[in-house]
Length: 119
Image: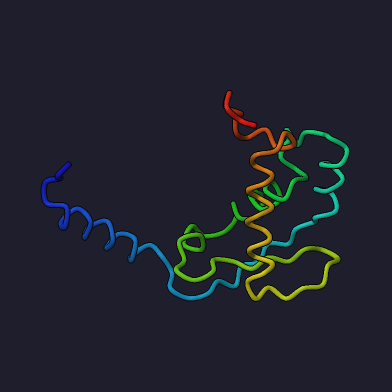
């Protein structure tokens, strides 16, 4: 399907993104407590209040940040787990993303509605 003047539309979109994003690494850091999230998961409880799961903790903290942080071209923020050693050189950040993806598909975090074909 062809669009009328896609280079004009795409150029304007890229320009708007460039104006509203940051290019450098952010100084923002998520401080997350994996122990309380794990306890909730092991107990089979649901985090309907959005207080204990890693995703919930991250959302509460990131909601106070400038929106430019999440539109960064570099890694937008650092991740630190409480009482866990680890320097975030990318591995802790990737672990955070994996954990959030798992939580979003779990019954402990009632954010997404399961589809009939979910195994």
